[in-house]
Length: 62
Image 1 (tube, rainbow, N blue to C red):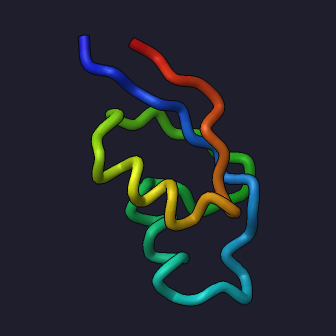
Image 2 (cartoon, rainbow, N blue to C red):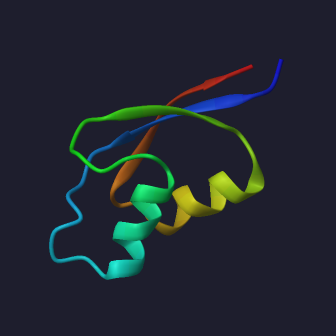
């Protein structure tokens, strides 16, 4: 079974740079308090690290 992480959006992309908004959309998040279960890869971790002020890792599975 592949490792996954559950990511929750806790910040609004309003008045943020466009690259941060696109990173949120790339993770499948676009509205406040939504959660997504994503594969735990270096690419996903890098995206989360770039917008760590907008998202929170709720859980790590696997």
